[in-house]
Length: 433
Image (tube, rainbow, N blue to C red; front, side, top):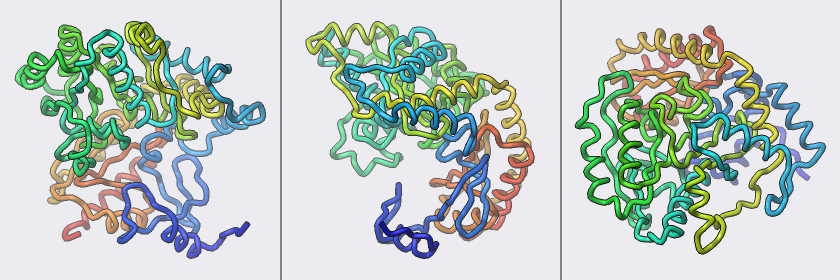
């Protein structure tokens, strides 16, 4: 086996063989070689150290190389790293499912484990469709989603992302067609305006015989725009779904496990969905794992139908290694005063964001929990701005007009201020880039 230990060799071979997410092979953006990670830092092969403002796409909530999570993985791998979940069970998976039912909103009582967030959305959509097929209502085969939303990169998940301004609009001619309502305009901290729900309500009233489920990201629309909206809107959605016999799917992949200041974003509106999707920080960023939870009504409806079971079964479902790390991650989060910690992060973000108001290139700023957003007036050049962030000792990966931060929860105030100062330095010199 050839061992590659030269940076230029790694980068050259990376560009020759590796296709990175959302990247071009004909006009590639150079990748940076990470050799190790510790706490909130990524260590590059050339000796530079970067503060990670992204928590590895929002999942590494405890930071990197955490001894508790490391130990959980080491202990489990000595017992078994994997075993099929068909006809076999084991303690890590059962313990995890019990935890999730106890922690999530009331009424979510059954847990289906899978390998990634996008797959958990696929599972949720499939659950909704099979439920109505089992109920002898196969005409309920449409979904209602929100513009500005994002739910993943797999086929069904793409079909409920924003069809015009989303990342997957080029696939519109091949994706199933669903219904879309305008994204909520009432901001999180503003009085709710009832007209905000009017078009959504009109679609529900006109199409409820065809709609199997509503799917949305509660309170925070993530990769579709980092938009924070009113809990009252979510309450109205829950009421309309209940009134018109439509299932509600809450996609908490990005918001789950404390990111918004509540353990789950649905708690801001004090509502329970019929189906909930979890992923990302479920394992603290250590392993790929996701979960789709549903109510007894949904699970019974599916299992009492013609098939007699839910027709889905990922090969790596219930992976013991991932489940063990997930249990350790959840226990670690709950062992701390995590809510006070998130408030601390939010307060520091809020104070630091005031710096950006004077920048001509900045349209607006906002923060919620451990999320900070700097919305630019024009889209940024990713290749150029990424290089400048790295020069500042930061790892920040914007998209479109959005320069956003979702750091590990362990980031100190001093580290947050250094992160924000570096972002400010880059954006203040951005004119013309």
